[in-house]
Length: 254
Image 1 (cartoon, rainbow, N blue to C red):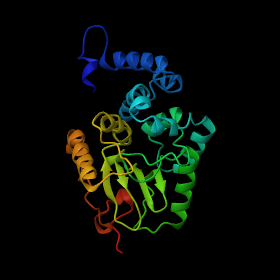
Image 2: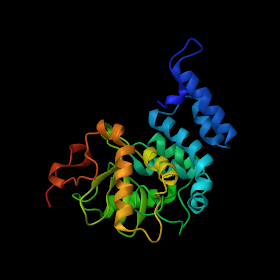
Image 3: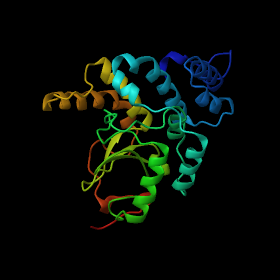
């Protein structure tokens, strides 16, 4: 839980106060579509984290990275999200992705790659549905898992959310033909960290060299040290098909 939310008090439970704070922030920042989820109490912890991230993004990204901010589309409509929900079955639509799509339906074409994932621009709800359908039909069992939900894509580069219950939310680099590797502790972390990179002067630029890329990796390692410590996956380590868990459809042989 974010440290500025305080500890439990007699005024109300932590969840009550968190819901009131987030609803207020969302409404003030024009995120009433997201806030509506909170009123009904239908958002899990990752969804709540994404709601906080969207507030921070709206406040800080326009001046830290105006072109990146401008590349974000408006909200996905309910039909797009319901089509996506149906396309993902038997995997659920993660709350953090649903919350994000309610505010931003991915990035515009040519909007640049999302800096913390380096795997292409963020996909729209419709594009995710199309990618899921294609990979489930054409993907090799040792290269693609039905537990994965694409969130960024460009040619052979792609990032996915691992929707398997025991690791739900981890972002995986599933670029082909490389072996998959853990990329970020969650989609919310990957979205949020662009603000931290911007404040540190580490957002990618056209003249980036190896030194800056390594500095950016080290910065994210330190930023995500705590969430990674609770993960069963090791950051950036390749995951060989013969060690894939059953929830990914493994183990597999090449």
